[in-house]
Image (cartoon, rainbow, N blue to C red; front, side, top):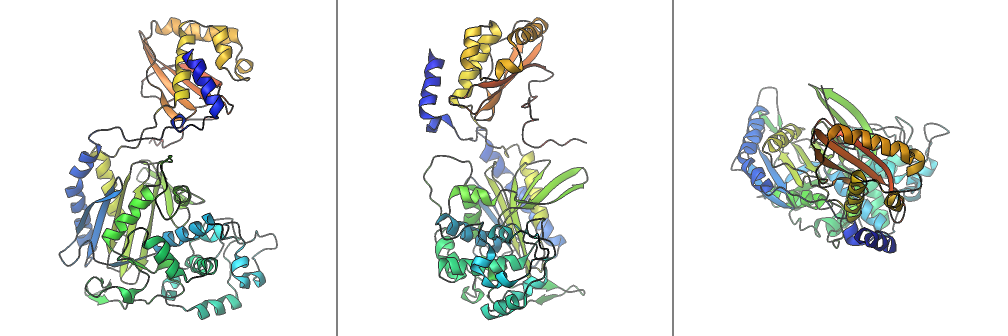
Length: 515
């Protein structure tokens, strides 16, 4: 009766009750303690990197579960309040501004760029069959505009009049829009103009008011001159003779939307924590300046860039909206971005499923401190504390597991028909299914009660049984019906309880690397 009541309850609500979709959660009690125990060794990694790269000054931080858990610096001249230029890390702020305007109904990512920048209406696309250039192409580096490092860096101070004149002359394309990845600073300069037009205030005003202030990032700005001299970090270039040349600061201009942000470790910690707070999807009220779903949208891999293999480590990478997104043999979702300008280099990276992020800011031209961040993640993984959230089994999965266990013990046609989707008996007739189950039962002997459901998602999971002659896994998936019914069921003898079975369409989503 309990299972029948659950089916009726879920059917009545369409499975939209909050407890029908439990969010993943951290389950290891010692997780944070283990992560914090690794912080001194992480400091050593960054200090060693700073010495090797001859960096005058560097500040780094670690974010854990929504707070800046640790900040350190390479020397006493710098601290958590020192303000560095973060260059192209600005692109994520620009993407946030665009998405906020989209969520408010003031623009669409599908808008042709020509709607907001009329000069594009007269600009020829590279081929007659090229798709229109859209806002989402600018945000995801699929615009077809040419890669423009380091030319773009030197345009930071360009004026609105300069940009208008460049647009009047036209922009050459390197590829057709929407066909492949190509990193473009110009694209984000254009997004700055779109933000200005859609919001009806200047880009820098909108970002300051709608994002920085609402995140409490009081030391962050796009105006270099507004940073108090005592907090302002000077940038340097390392010359061939080993001496340092101070780089002249680039003033803010129309290309600020691609790389003009300045911030401190205290502020950047809040920013990384905000991005991490978008995970997991859940019912809690929104408390950020941009919707959690939009922040997650930024971190989706919209434009694949490349697949690399180095020293047995495979990495697939590409671009989201203002963020780099990658997968490697360690983690299936890595989000981040770097920044480099004359005098500065920076990087931020976070693991949404693990609640952990790191960043580093340095004052040496184009130094990109992504390597020590990656090394620090390796160290955190070795600590045993870097554990991802685990998805609890939904009530419907637990109920279905109980039905499946009942059928394993003693097949009952009535119970099977109660839980089965319309395809279930067509795919495998009852006599065949019963015969296959009995053959496996004869091989493994007496089995225990089924273990907990290892949920792959809210409608798919696996439950193992410990038997006299091994382990039996029961993998099942539910159909997109109301109520959800059993569309696929497989019993298999497993070589190890750790083996995860897959759906008919393939192995479980995630990371699987082997030599």
